[in-house]
Length: 189
Image (cartoon, rainbow, N blue to C red):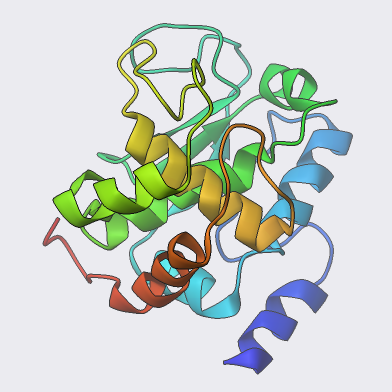
């Protein structure tokens, strides 16, 4: 599997198996999107690609299915698409977050059957000690704090950083790394 990771990281600039139509992005944000996609382990790229998961860019800042404009990006499970925009990348600058990695974490969560919503994940969520008032600790605008933590844990592990708002515990790291091998195929989700 290591050769798959190397293949995605060394692919010619501007290409990636998970990259859909990125033409709405400015060049700097297109390159940032591809840079983040290259951080995803090869087996995860293969699994998500086999489920037709893609990243697509939109021109407008109004991005979320609920019409909110304060999201940097979002994952649309019905279309199996991560949606990003120039505004999303611009707003993401200066924070320790990697928007594309985070949204691909939601795609992986979906691919393994929304494990973040299952009872066993709740214990891991509590052990990670989500910061009081953070969106990893309570619901904001319809978000589930456990699905947000799972997605951000993926981003932190793949992007090699410590997220602001909770601790990536050994157990949380293990579940993200192990469950990526349990991706369900086809239309069964």
